[in-house]
Length: 286
Image (cartoon, rainbow, N blue to C red; front, side, top):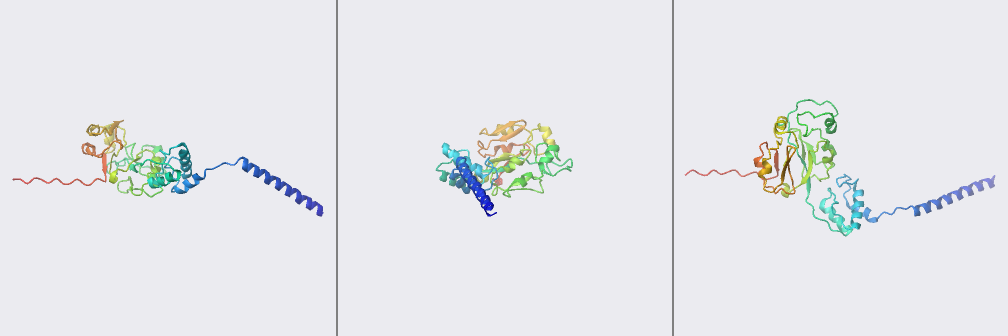
């Protein structure tokens, strides 16, 4: 009996030893090398894993940055959450130089408030923008504007966007927005756009994406762009184009002169964070 137990133990021990040797050989033969810099870069990144960089989390961006450094350039790769400060640390870690990019911010390109774009039907389905957009035009006559269900609010990890209960539109907090782009990707009607934050957070943009012809657009929303082209003609920098009955301001060309704001007949062009114009002083009558 004792001899059988000894034999069984010896056999099991031998099998364990052989298995250990096989596993050791496999671990050496099929080992995947990971550059230690990837872990270092990942630790430097903020860890938001928001996907705003275009990769599946901070680990994916770190891997791309290391590969870019080995190829000689990391231009075009950036962490929108960490911004220039974090990217500067990453560049120092990898021994690279990065171009100074201008800060971006999410902009809501819809001015269809409850007063300007009234509700004409009542939606009783799942209360999300995605579901409402699939089921039809929404609760207003505008088939291009904000649906007001707050999918963008739910998508933001930084508490930077909230629905205004009076207007029914989302509003972005410039200071909290990291330009990760989560709200942009979530909006089923593409009314949210990342634009340059601008000097002193000042920017000019067309707050409408309606592509219907003027009379139809105006019937749906009193503040709609009617594609009249007055802004395009007025702009001295060629920053404005009108396509498919809708105007668009190229923020790379715009010089913030605000001439377009003055000529827009429907006030669809918004100038944000500019000082209020000084009141005109009437000349004293002699």
